[in-house]
Amino acid sequence: MKIICNKEEMKSAVTKVIGAVSQKSAISAIEGILLKSYGNTLFLAGYDLEIGITATIPARVQREGDVIFPAKLLLEMLVKMDGEEVAFDMDSKYVCTIESGKAQFVIMGIAADEFPDLPSLSIDNYFTLSQGELRDMINQTFFAIAMTEQRPVHTGSKFDIKNGYFNMISVDGFRLALCKRKIEEIGEKSFVVPRKTLNELMKILSDDYDEKISINLSKKHIIFEIDNYTVISRLLEGEFLDYEKAIPSTSTTNVRIQRRIFIECFERVAVVTEEKLINPVRLLFSDNKVYIDCATSLGRIKEVLPAEINGPDVEIGFNNRYLLEALKNCKNDEVIICLNRAENPVKIIPPESDDYTFLVLPMRLNKYEN
Image (cartoon, rainbow, N blue to C red; front, side, top):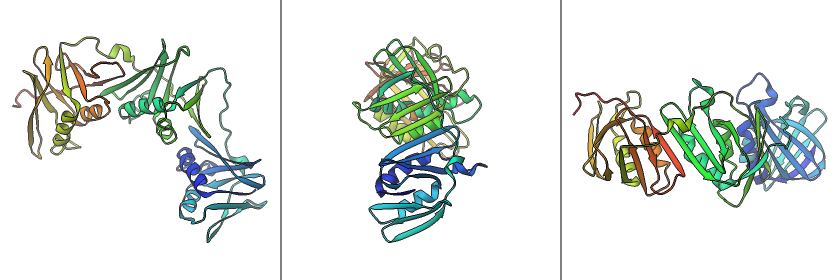
């Protein structure tokens, strides 16, 4: 293989592809990036047997070939090299000479046939979505994906497409995030995409609502095609939470409040909260005011915020971080907080739409606190 390509284009591609490279494996091939040159194209691929990312960039191919190159080493070289172009020249024994600017590296590669085959899907279940819309939906639900493997299916987000709506749902046992958008009718589809895959997608997706992402689906895998990138992932299996039943349909007390002042209050509360020992933030919704009180071993904070409250008084406790993250992922200037009894989940929704719904489970308050 002998090629010349733009260094910045290659660095950008490697930066994204490396997200699918295994950090530590008994199989040395999946700790590297597959480079394959043909025609006027350089193909790059990383695959850790769970997620694969591929990219194509233009190249001046003087001799076709393929090799597996150490991923971290390749990226570090591209970052440190000072030339505008980078040249690769590999001999028959996989010894690669890489030149750019003043630097020349000689690195040993691995035979390309040791790289595992990427999953291939038929085109029977193929549809498109807006890149900008998908990016927004992932942004608004990612924070609620479970971090532990207690229920593996909850370590991803559910894509539930039906009745002309695209619902994305994340849940971790303490909170739920649902983002909803109306889309063109494409039939019913339901699948769960792993957290890592969504994280890598976010590095590739654009903010443009007019740009499309193509999605190809099978029973166990999904392929996202974004411009010159492809993200291939296994899907998570298992019984996902019935989110429609989990979300309360009614509430006895509704609170309309400015989101920004609520966020700023909880950021101040965070000053006296402790990570290892979770102290509930006490909230009393009464007489068009929200009374906030949090006492820890570090200190105590009290605040009173204005709000529009309809319904009986409610006193309830929360994990400060869970409530703060939900509020930060809302998009409106105001939010509606829907309350029932102190032990019931609290629902946070926008005032005039159903674009998102966040649920946060309360914490028990000690009766002797005042």
